[in-house]
Image 1 (cartoon, helix red, strand yellow):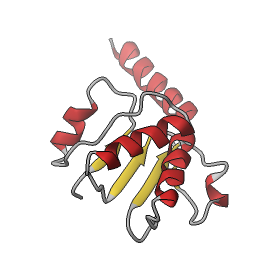
Image 2 (cartoon, helix red, strand yellow):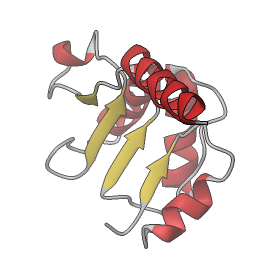
Image 3 (cartoon, one colour):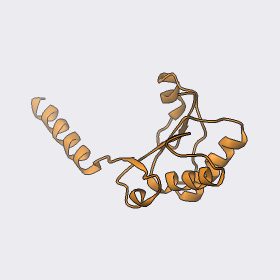
Image 4 (cartoon, helix red, strand yellow):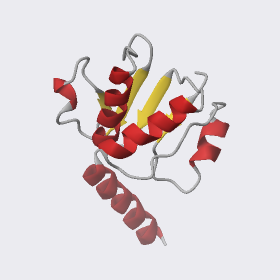
Length: 122
């Protein structure tokens, strides 16, 4: 991948991107469709042409898809998009939005079990 678009809620996403050996993109300041639209527009205006976009959530991804549609960029053929979280509307887009379902409740429960196990061991 030449470039990755990042909309991640981490303190230093640029370090994660660099550690993966990828060039960085632009951050989304708002977790909305409008935020995704504006962020990808800024990225496009800078001349960057990512091969893949990872959006923090579905609304951001849908905003990105809207901008790309307006630019006649073909999703899946010209660029890959994935969002995190359970996709509600993504199955109705053309093409369908690829989504990674992160089971937050399960992750929290598992983390609590591991922590309690370590506490009990002393």
